[in-house]
Image (cartoon, rainbow, N blue to C red; front, side):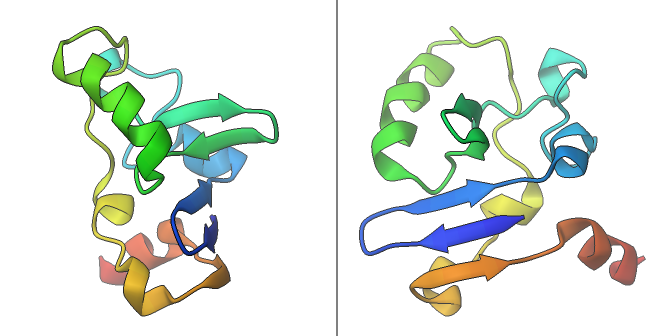
Length: 102
């Protein structure tokens, strides 16, 4: 997962494997288990959970129940400590982190 932290927003780019993983994005899975914050951007899939401008637009639809995906993010992204990461580009592997915990 590539994470680009900027001064006013954070871009998160999950890998193909991550977008399909049931504990992360779960694309192609049941609506209740699919992350609402995964979108298709010009550069590919992007998680907008920490991208405040894009988040606000989709959050309103999500709160009103007007999205197909129903999961409010994944634990990995929801618990990211963005200030701790700091401004810049970072690469994290949530699947390996998950395996190390078990």
